[in-house]
Image (cartoon, rainbow, N blue to C red; front, side, top):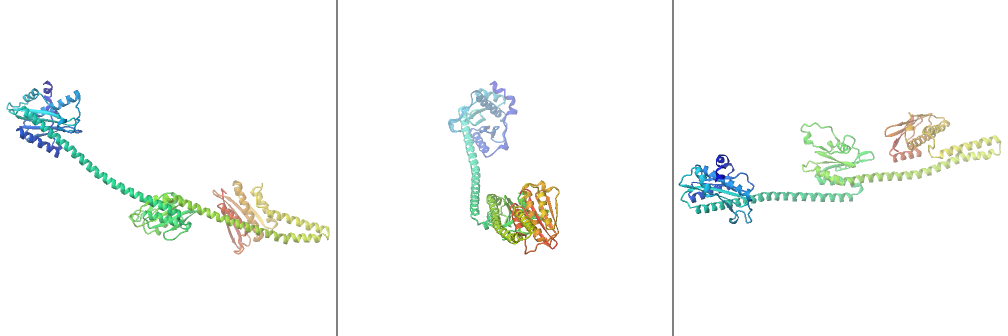
Amino acid sequence: MNDVLKYRDRLAIDAPRPAAARRSSFADRIVAIAELGAATLAAERCAIAFRSSGAGADDVVYAPDGDSRWDGPINAILVALENRIGDAVAARGMKRARRAPGSAESIAKIALSADEIDAIARLDKISEGHQAAAAAFTDGTSAVRIAMVVRADRARAELDASLGLIARAVFGEMTLAAVRASLEFWRTHGAESGRQAVDAKRELGQERAATHYLDEAVAAARRAHPNERFGRFGQLVAGGAGFDQWMVAVADSGSFLVAASSSGQKQFDLGEASALAESFRRRIVIARWRDRDEGGVERAGQYFEDKMFGGPYVCIPFESGAVALASRDARASAARAEAIVERLAPFAASWVLEREAARRSRLVRQLALRMFSAIDDERARIARDLHDDQAQLLAAAKIALDGPREAARSIFKQVEEELRRKTRELRPASLGNASLDQAIEREFERLKHAGVKAKLTHSGAAERVSRPVQQLCFQVSREALSNVIKHARAKSVQITIESGEAAVRVSVADDGRGVSANQGEGIGLAGVRERLELMGGRLTLESHAGGTTVVAEIPGSA
């Protein structure tokens, strides 16, 4: 009794109040149960407090609506029942239902004694013509508290039975609400899962189609004829990504050339003002959107591709080049194109290497053919020299043997000098143990005998380069000086050697009569040219009536 009365002063604060904002169709059904119970027992006031599993504060409904004069004692009784439930949990814990929640067998009753109810009734001045009936019920998961004020002539057994029926009806509604909530949850999430499954299936189909296209593109790239490879590359990238115009450019022998295009143009250098060249050089994707640029955005500059393509385009780099793709169809995908380029890029790189290997193979074959031709020509020249010079000198020596001794001695001396000269000419152009300056100065002795003045100009550059590069410098100088002696009819010649960051430049200039178009550069210089080209250098010959200049550029790493 004292435990019940000690909560009397807290009723104004702790007693649950109606929560109209939390009313729902479920709460309306509980109100209907309270109204039915009140009508059946002719009760003055009936209150039902209920809490489902996981909920916060209890919801409380009252019937009949609008008559609140009995709410004081009813709220006091509901608080007492809540405390009784708390005491029971703290003392021994509530046993969870082993049967279906809300079934008659699983519901346990927790009641106040008659004395406890009468004490609250006296405090709240319930008249003698009325009585209070109350009980709490739990199924181990949820709890329901019921309190009502009825006439005093109602039998206690009838009231207890009615409270039990009301409680089971509330538990039934709670179970039904839980089932409906679960059904709605699974219906909503099932629909969402269905949409996700459809989307995933569609994406999987698209991914499989993309993978299949990439596999077919790789197979097509492997089957492509060497002369059609880069054209096939452009077709596969453009066709797989929805573009209708394309151009493929590759880095080849120091130039950036168009290898194939949808317009049929190819094998021309794009130059610096090219989006393809910039994309390859900076290794970035460059997109040009004409519709955006026309809206007032200032463009960084004009590219060659701006004039070539009639609509927006994008440039995508790969290891050995870049591809430009254009289309007026908004469905074209640059991301898809990048994926295809990434898959086909290794093939393009191998094609460039094959082209370079084939070019070098052709150059080696040409060098071999020219080498054998040069050997034959040199043999013929030696034979002519022996016939024209040495044979005549030997015939003169034979005649001199029958003449004065001094004449014979003079002729044999000429034979010896001529043989030494021919021997020196037959030796390969090699520095040996001499420095580059010393070797060139020896060659100047030949010019001196021919009546040609010679001058060597360099600022120590020759001595700073590697020995192989010095050897090439000497070979170029020697062959150029031989041409001066044989053909130029020059009075002077100057050799200039300059060393740059990437190459050494050798210039041999004379003031002779020049080289005619029919005469050409000769076997010796042709051999030097081919040797330089094989090593990445080059040889140029500029000739006019006032002289000839031979310029050789030799890579510093040769």
